[in-house]
Amino acid sequence: MTLMSMNFLSRVRGVPVPSISEFRRVTLLAGALMAEHLRVGDSAVDATAGTGADTCLLARSVGACGKVYSFDVQKEALKETEQRLSAEGLRDRVLLFHKGHETMGSIPELRQDSKIMGIMFNLGYLPHGDKEIVTKTDTTLAALESSVTLLAPKGLMTLCLYRHLAGLEESMAVEKWCAQLGAGFNVHKLETINKNNPPYLILAEKTK
Image (tube, rainbow, N blue to C red; front, side, top):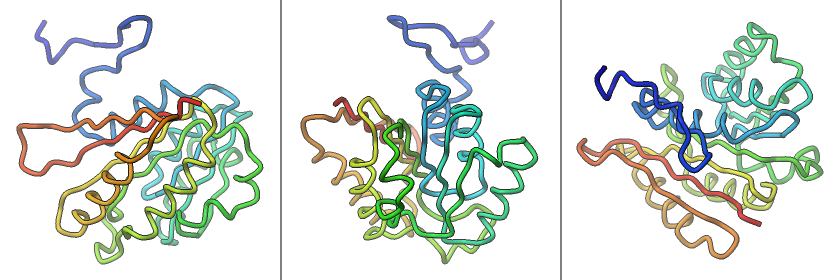
């Protein structure tokens, strides 16, 4: 058995390690880590619904008694997300918002929810969508400011960042913002180092 074919769903110091296949893309890695982190009954936020993959993952992870809040500015994205949720029988545990993620701090349901243990950001543009519609630096930073307040202690935030032309400024600004998070947060950067400008992942854990 080769290294790449082994299943690494083992434990290191009691913590489950995802399979090696989940390191192929930062989106898969973010999902694997978030799914392991969340528990039944938790709440979670998908700040960028996109195709609905992360929203469905969050909905499965929090279970029937959990709650997920999912945001997107594109009706097409929310329609696809809703279809995926319905197909998996998950629709009733998700609130969909046709709003930018910068508005999450103004949503009463979120402000009153003390169980938000996970927030996912997959920045950039909607796959197979209009590539002129991308997340913006200013609104993403505003969403991050709200996120650190909404996130419960021991909560996890994942950010998939892109270095293509449309996302470079945003990724640099987000990384700088994350680097200044002080006491109360552990922040990690995970990236592939043998590729040309690959996407990368930032993890922010709220420790208290």
